[in-house]
Length: 503
Ligand code: NAD
Image (cartoon, rainbow, N blue to C red; front, side, top):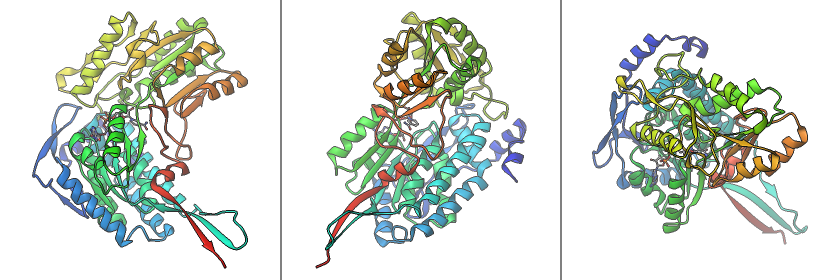
């Protein structure tokens, strides 16, 4: 079946497929599915309706040791690391193909595990994850090394080599996609990987280990160790034989991982962390209705559980009231619904802890005196799931907690500004620096803004642009290094200088 036919499954058919789904919760180490060494498991519950999806291996230090040893042995053997890039490329392309070929099952696992709408899992997450693998695979046999401009009797070679064993710790908001942003370049460059999915969304990572083997990735080259972050995650971060740690998740955990690296073997640490992105609308925006629709999508898509969510909406005072009305109108179309219904655009919040956190922020907004103009409530609690209405606060000051801290839910703060200088000052007054958007018809102002914004990504007259060709990552406490594009390979390779005397 083609992807288009698959999208046509009805709500009932998805529910039946969910009931029939077989779920594997085991770790995958050295080419084999296996329980955690301790035999411990944890319950994997669905935020869709609270159902028990299965028991998942609770890996800890003992499993980290096994997985890292297997990854190291595979790396040293050269079975993958010394294959020609063109040959690794073929395997990674097959891996990508298998993700797409199993898209329905993977989409269902993703939706049941973390609550996002099935239409998003099927049309956004899984194809984008496959694209990330394919792009990195396709790129790797087109990257050349360098020769240094040295004297006639010397040769100076500057080469890039795989780092060795990579531990990848990923979050729950785009579980498979974040994993594949790491796996693509890490595997393409010839490394062995130990992947640790979030305890809130481990299922697709576990499933794709088998697809990797089917694609031809040798045992030990990709290991998957589910479990709680503070046990298995810290064991990997403190491990003396992990060369590089790549991470996507919260800034709090990111800082802890830097400490772990310093306490252990000074492994390289690359961090994609939180955000509080400003979406800045000037009165001369080319199309205010389009900008309002984008502002709504920027906070409601994926339940607002997006690192680049446009959570601070900065609007020029002269159009602020009119623009807020347009955004409210657009946001009303983002009504939470059952994630297995193909018509649903907003699904469930990932778990009870996250739900509570979002509701506490909404309360903090009210307490601080911001004007609640839309939403603010938990809904549909009777079915056992975790749903929150898209919420809009007007009259927010940038000093308020709801404007400073990452909420990671569908809560939008509207902040007025009077001119470009003030917009820049407010936008940059954040510990984060992931992304920003600017809406204006003035070309020179667009460029001035793009230069002044202290963020890793800037979008002009759109929100959330980009594809695999553009680097993704942030300034300040949003992290270091970049995922996607050729820049991602910098994380997964060491640079070597070799000097040869010809005399
Ligand atoms: P989190 O930091 O709680 O967890 C991320 C991962 O780290 C999980 O696998 C978790 O188990 C693990 N972990 C937690 N504590 C750990 C510890 N002490 N040692 C080792 N590992 C540990 O983040 P989250 O709630 O899963 O994800 C949401 C966050 O991710 C948000 O802040 C969001 O902005 C960020 N994010 C960033 C990007 C980006 O590219 N910049 C993309 C997506 C999400």
